[in-house]
Length: 474
Image 1 (cartoon, rainbow, N blue to C red):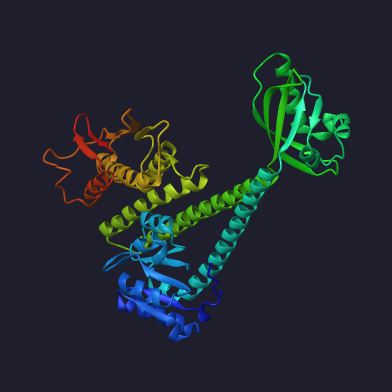
Image 2: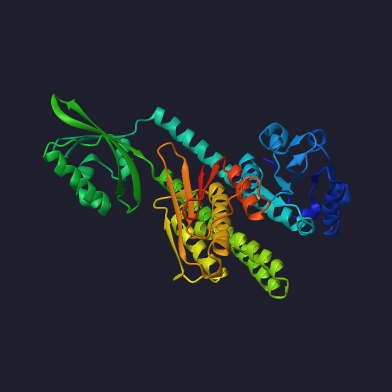
């Protein structure tokens, strides 16, 4: 595997960007950081990238996601083309979907284009190179572990596993040399006369007693299980046990085969620890996204205070509410134990409560109810669905209950047997004009609703019985 230096001023860098201004900004950032100009290569297409990389492979590539002759993921999913070096993906549209696509395809990192990102590229590359080095070290460790396991399996082919023959009562009548080595005893007699309680860890000893009780009652005995033993020198080892009924010297006995899985257990613990670290990182990402959105929302609120035009102030407040609805998604994901989906009922309640505050509604005048039990959505559905509810509820609070009119607001959501979600937003306010058509209206809020419904590949229906009712299916 290719070793790369951690200093971004002493490496070969390839910038794959068809926008000359962007490529120049990145190149200047590296030069300003002290990078050798001759070590900075620039390509404007995938074809140029492939030719340049084949002639002289870089230490790292910074690549635009969309290029004139294709997308960077074509290179990421083709190892012979991508080469044994890290690739960072850039894009002008910083959507989570694009980020996930790039990272899943093999990109080391994902960067949203901006003057700040270009200026900070040397530090970004330095961080990426450190991550790449750690990744290569982990791969080498995994490869070393794989080779060790192969050697272990090969040695098992040449020498038997640990084997014991035990009576129905559990007494050892035979043990091969391998089992003695596993336990660390010098003879079969020493193994036989050492109490089980001293050979097993407390938990494994308790499990063994339960198995013995079941055997005495004639109940089914598992043919495979795991135990943790204490060797003669006090070391704890983990064994995988295979148990099978046999005839031994004409009598019913049990053949018990032992395989040492201590290293596998350690590897599983390392993987579990790594997974916990990734969960902490993902939680922190959602937390930071939420905080950034809250900062944007606060800036809009502060700016709106200096605006005297009522209509302009209302536009700012509406934008703030939309950002708040998206921020709540990341807040719920940050609080959730399952990062793949959120409890949408609780989310709706919090969002509507926030809108009541924004539009200064008296809960005693407008009574709202949320019916969305056991509804969970992933982030790709939750954000557009949350924005739809934000727009419809905001419209109801602004117009349906204007001039102090009282009434009810109902938000209901359920999922049918075919997997489709049904969303209902209904108010008992003054209603919409008879000639109102949601599909042709020029109102920004309803245009957003129409676009979001299309994004969900859904349908929307408007009813005017006893107020206003929107039914959305996706």
